[in-house]
Length: 115
Image (cartoon, rainbow, N blue to C red; front, side, top):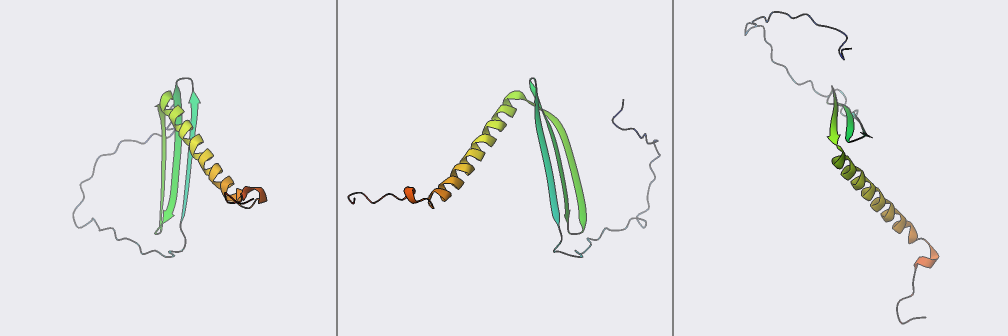
């Protein structure tokens, strides 16, 4: 089964006159206070390969842009990616817990030489 269910007939290329082509002007932002970004990445491991799916959609300056990507990676690259993500997460968690530990009464030690 084809991934593209709709088939487009081939058309002849038409030569356009220079007078027909108009320059595209950038539309000024109607509301510069409204913009959004959405991104989604999914990585799954299957036997000796990792499958990656990514999607990115954004609305900026009155222009909606959407991109999608799918591909396969080698298993060693996937393992390195997971390891890096785990180390990053643990580092951020440790930093957060250290900031909370300052609020606990037993975390304050008396200076050396004082009892």
